[in-house]
Length: 420
Ligand SMILES: Cc1cc2nc3c(=O)[nH]c(=O)nc-3n(C[C@H](O)[C@H](O)[C@H](O)COP(=O)(O)OP(=O)(O)OC[C@H]3O[C@@H](n4cnc5c(N)ncnc54)[C@H](O)[C@@H]3O)c2cc1C
Image 1 (tube, rainbow, N blue to C red):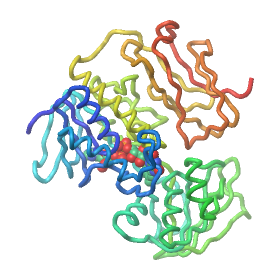
Image 2: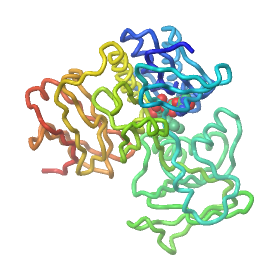
Image 3: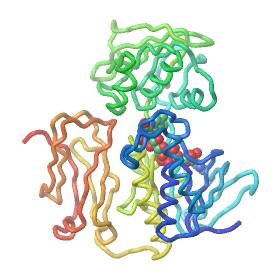
């Protein structure tokens, strides 16, 4: 088996953008390994528009957006293997993978980029009483059935969870002739983007019931009805608030979780908040030369941010191969408190950072007319007012290298503050 400097695990938008950036940074020895039969990742099944507004200033469908990057990979002659499952990544960066042509093979890479994306959280189905009849699907599975396989999962639909996939599938099923009766969301706020609530529910008159959950599924062989009920602040159903909907389909859209079995077994340090790797300013994990980007690192709302982040991972991987591990420089810790849940990255080595560094994070609840504040040690250096912040949307602050060099903070804290 030929060896490569940089092995990229996953050929979705993150893997593709990372490969292009690594090549443009001067590395000619790159291999993308993708378990599916085509490049493009989850975007291949996202046939709705709304992709690429930031990157291309155009509204593209998922496959169109993916193709823009696939074309660059092809034009640059970057190698890839499809139908190839990565089975293991060792701490010394030996990648073990398998496919029908090569069988099981190993590549001792100099740098590895983790770009495996995420999967749907099965939670939500687990503690619902009743049988497990046919007709219960995750929203992503339903999306694949409708958009790629050409099957309709059902005609009368209830959706549990208001993550973006659930919202998008509410519209999709409606356009395909189904009746979506309700979207029930356990939390008092939606887990999806505001624009998806407007364009996928409001525009089609589909009700969204916040603080509601499924309490009963009827039907032994196939779903015949679903009952939802309001939940209190303790998220327990309130007796007497039940509403029963006859339906043949229940879609679950209860969040996404990074696909990190490979990262974990490689010894990559994981964040308990994001379920993705802990990374530094170069998007490098605790294993020197192993980088992470895209939904495997933290679940993104927009693919544009995935591509932007992945380019940094690709360029930094190429730099690592060329220059090796850089050990010099002070490391600043980043903390998220008071409503901010996490930060990506978690540490910054000022010597290694670019002139500007985007730090991304999510909030844990809905905040109105509040401030994103950044503290260098105890000094507040940024105080940006936001009309609304919600857990479904990613937030960011941009740090300047010169400011960090001047102030030399030991730690940087991001917090959400109410009106002074
Ligand atoms: C239903 C849905 C709707 C969305 N709608 C929008 C939208 O309207 N606008 C927008 O901007 N964004 C949207 N997004 C978000 C966007 O699609 C994602 O942020 C983006 O696809 C993430 O890219 P990724 O490369 O990290 O992951 P993915 O696209 O999931 O790619 C990961 C790839 O890794 C491969 N892989 C995983 N494990 C292995 C392994 N062991 N070996 C080999 N290959 C492996 C997978 O097969 C996959 O191809 C949506 C996402 C979903 C799921």
